[in-house]
Amino acid sequence: MSCGNHHETPCDEVLARVYTYLDGELEEGGCGEVRDHLDECGPCLREYGLEEAVKKLVNKSCGCEPVPDDLRAKVLGRIEQVCGEIRSGDAKTTERA
Image 1 (cartoon, rainbow, N blue to C red):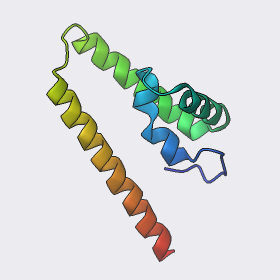
Image 2 (cartoon, rainbow, N blue to C red):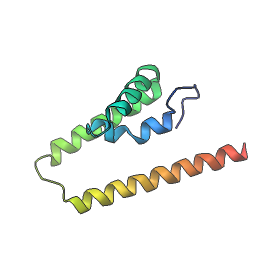
Image 3 (tube, rainbow, N blue to C red):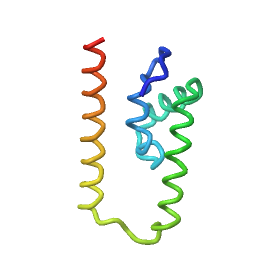
Image 4 (cartoon, one colour):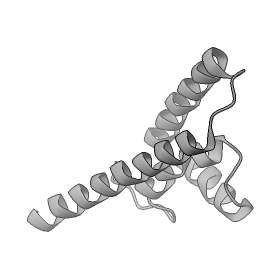
């Protein structure tokens, strides 16, 4: 996803790090980049708000049970795979244009 405007940190890069940011697992420099981007990009801010709401809902429903490490690794691996597929699809679309 891209809003079409130029940003120091591209939209797709910010959105790829949203869950890491929400979980407080992003390094401080990365947090600053994400915050700065969200301050200037309405579409990404809306997507961030949606992801934050989903995270809160999941936490409310399942927050009391610890997640097994292997499940966490599988889910994160799948998310990275899907993000890679999306990025590669965006690159192919850009090449055709």
